[in-house]
Image (spheres, rainbow, N blue to C red):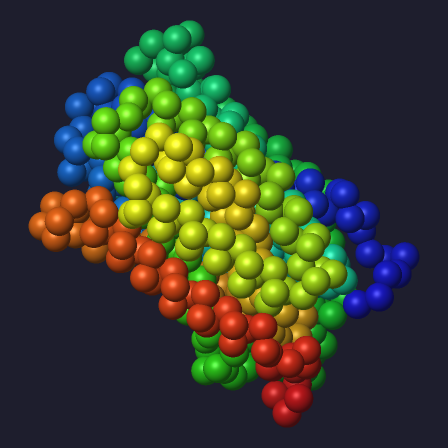
Length: 406
């Protein structure tokens, strides 16, 4: 799509995307881990109940992410995103009041449902409007996750200090207000590209969804995204514990994790910008290779320096890896099919996030400890690097064009 007067300003659209990812990923998905301790203490939840609440959000996302993509392709990305954001806001509002476990389950599932209708359609919207800067804009959007986690890390303890046992409820309430504000901003400033509108005689993009689901190039990208889902979540959950088990302090591990988060905010846009000029496949292979290297370092040595290098290299590469695999998914199909294709590959990522902790947790307890678990993730990542070499050789033509015959 060439620049035209109808195209919204890049900065405005990027801000909408960044704020959407901040709300539906940082607030709705990742903040739960920080809110959990005071919430668990106040409600008397068991660890099993707390774990199920986190899992139900992931399941809600997984169950409806394909529906979110189809809705965006059929009714427009902007309307779908706003629906998702409002749904997430309702979930946040409910969590400020709920105490019964059944209601908590329903509301946490609602957060996953709303995310399914927001995140993938927003990525699709940015990718369609700005194809020549696709890596950059998606990289900027992913930086909203790191920014959101910084805000959550500061907000939740502050609310606990100010409001005591009700601090966690206030935090959910603030998230809800922010979600509604972002929904208004998207309504006012975001815009669906003309190509996403279908005429009365043209079949909707969803009519050709099986052409996308069965396409070899799309499946290859989806498999790499699934591998990223398996391995990234294992690192996020268990690497600090691995470091502490080797005799290093929790404070130092937390500082290294914070360093990784800060670096990742800038890394996503930089890798995305690089991919727009150097090539998506080249940049994706390089970033995934760096993540693989970082994952392998603690297998060789468990000194403080080695763990520092692990978090340093992860911070410099992991958000780039996310931005580039997401951009690669949008590269494979014509603009009208991007919401469907991106939602499809996200199913693999979400499934990986469910599989990774289960397998790694079993390996840690039954298979020989942290090094065996991270050895497993290292080998899986090597497979991912091999598959990115195939992505590098993909032709520039769309795998699925504007019409089924393309």
